Length: 308
Image (cartoon, rainbow, N blue to C red):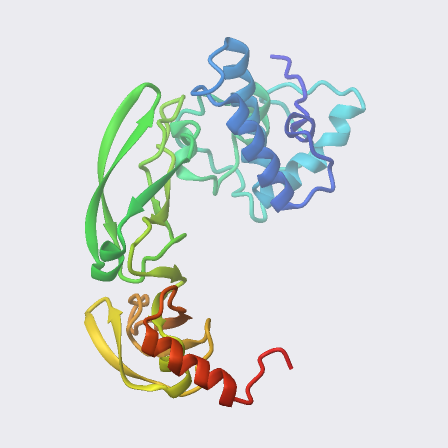
């Protein structure tokens, strides 16, 4: 049977000197474009198979090396015949010699089977066809969920017109932007192979009490100008575990933060982030007669000038 050469580099749209990361980037872009969930044409399915086959070879250093060694012979016009003598011996020395690949290689081209049908050490799931598409979803949780983790939450996944519900274990240390991967919970394989993976990005819902910075929490505490100037021995601050009293130093400026250690979000493993109480100085918009007298006297007596 005559076997036609396949230019895997051209299929992925990359040059021969391309790096592994560039190969992976090109593959992901094309696989997303031609995946059966997106491109439902027969041409799209064929292209998707070619893309996966090219990636299967070029992502593996040993298979890529063998392919590159054989490539010039095909490019010079030689038409190899499956089952023939390729002049490269039995591919011993890391390729498994005459060890045969166990299982059906359906889904791969004759060219692929001709070159790699005798190779040992190939991934066991190749006989199962191409892996399904990885799916990416965002799961919004409350701040209380992150504080109480580990907890379980449910998420609905839509793929190829159907919806599945999954229970997700949220580990300790989860925070805004955290990423989880559920192996084998992504899209189905178009050729009977393994499912892809499900990649979950955590989004913390807005909380009326705190904003989040990594595993630290920030809360705003309002004080009057005289409280900021004179200081306070007992300033109430809301924390996730309740209200605590802290000392406010005299001369505190608006925007200054007081650090409460161990009052933030749990860290992965052990430990807890911190809580920062951000001071906001609030000026009264209405004054009674006595307050006006006192502030007027202060204005006359004080030497403080914030503009100098």
